[in-house]
Length: 190
Image (tube, rainbow, N blue to C red; front, side, top):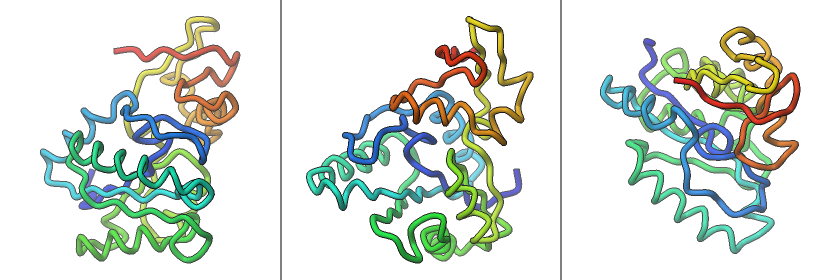
């Protein structure tokens, strides 16, 4: 891989996608735990940079977010978390949180990879001058649709460039991934 630092978005990348004012779900998405364990064995630094505007809108979520961060830090070897609640130089697509993590770990932009699921994640990586990977490409789950035989392996551009699976997640407001062709729930293969 060659990156010394991998920064992850949170909602839709490490944990199920949710509405910004909905409670957090203490569950990792498929493929996350194994990939992060592999990065940890390689000595790669890791952090999280996430927009959390819902914390400003619903102050009761602050405790819920804090509990999620503690749970994540117990589950994964990721101990640096940055979040932004209001527009400004830290909130994605601005690169502030990414710069903070690069400085914390003493890593340059060309040594950093940001993994996310949304256009603002990609823009933040571009603005910070670091590499970017779409979540499904990075965690490499073999998604397929039992209803129409669509497979992520056979159409990587549909997932990575169009972000169709993430769009279906947002449309249905749950963590399940849906087929970009027919809208039916996807299954993950071996």
